[in-house]
Length: 317
Image (cartoon, rainbow, N blue to C red; front, side):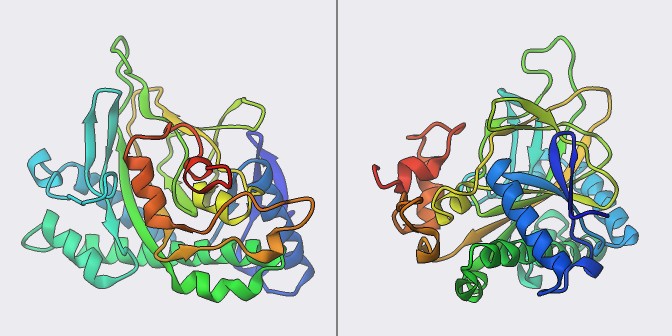
């Protein structure tokens, strides 16, 4: 398979293991493809073969079990950061329901969430979520490594990895409700606030991404595929080169959509690498605390459909 080709007007990039040997021609070509995709679209569809069919099945079976729990149980998933806990029953997005597992690559955190939902335990759920988060975090690190190397900023990579933490969000979108106000809205237009989001879904297409030209693209997920999407923090880190795209979920048809999203966040101060600043690209963003950017967004002082980074830590901010 070629390094990159169009699918539903989004780039499709093959990140299977055999093509991912650093220093090889295929690696360098893939690095360039990833960078072009994130600069041009803010996202791409990745083919990644490190999630077994068995684990994939266990994950989505577990999601069905999770969202079948009583609402009183699901709302135990609380957080002092909105959107890191249970989200649902929203009048403007009535089909959406999701939960959050912070520090999702650690057994302690996933076990804590599991015990909250199933006080008597659910070993299969815990094992599936932890295994999935660990495997997909490897994909996230791979994309980061390719981006840092493509920009000549690889000396900053290890520090970035050491500061990265992961939030896993299981998501359910109920089938569309014809004739109801907002009856097709699974998620309103927004940009993500993290570095990267890795999205994986059941076989119901509903994610729409807005191109730089304003066109809405309905994303098709081939088998063994993941959508890799940049957030506002990556836009700032890259000095505005990487695009943080607007996206939404619009449901059609009579089947629910299950999705699992892994978001990466930086626990420290994010600084723009000097390698990304030159005469053609003057400094656009100040160093920023990532959690501060998230809290600024949640304060409601900025439009959720626009990049928070520009108002929070832009040079003119």
